[in-house]
Length: 300
Image (cartoon, rainbow, N blue to C red):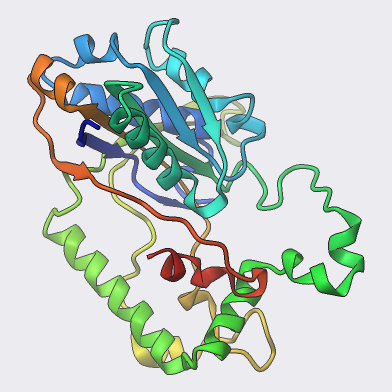
């Protein structure tokens, strides 16, 4: 088997739902990420014309990010119409699974150059999709009810099972924000973030006319300045009355996309590419639905 190398990786800033990227379609975020990967290469056009496959992970592949968004974005990003593409779904791990699939294709010799990407616009596609239809057996049979639990409730279950206190959660969340803010200030994300220009039609009550407003988004919107242990301690729990999980210790709803280029050893030599990392292996694992958040721990 050949080795699989990560050559380049680019992403949009991560916007909060209903934030600066809320009016931008998911497929446009994806297109921008894919194009940014090739723009970062000195021979981007040559590499772009020789991609063997494009794999995109999306947890809610419908609406503006439906209809095999991978193929649509591939063509609109300027790749040849001979480039195949498919969309996959492993919910939260969809983008990671796309990278894993791409690496496995390369390692097995099935491909030399693969784009792996992920996209999610939680502002334009509702969390449960536009017309959710859960199997009645999930909601009417006790042994299956955990399948319908929301992520917040499963987080409460994980906290209970593993004795993760409210104080520990708050401290972890605060440290996460501090590190992200520090990294932003030091420019540690500059090489991976591809700033994106958004447009929005704005109506003026004075002139009774529409104008186009543009905005360049270049930083993640999640990290918050000014948080403290004291301020986090004042927040209400949101998923269980006697629970411990708050808005501060929950994943935010986000808009964004990212893409990576995976290459074989032969492609690295042929196109004079510089590997940033080697993709060695991955693992997945199933856990009880009521504690789904512990899945990555079991996999590792």
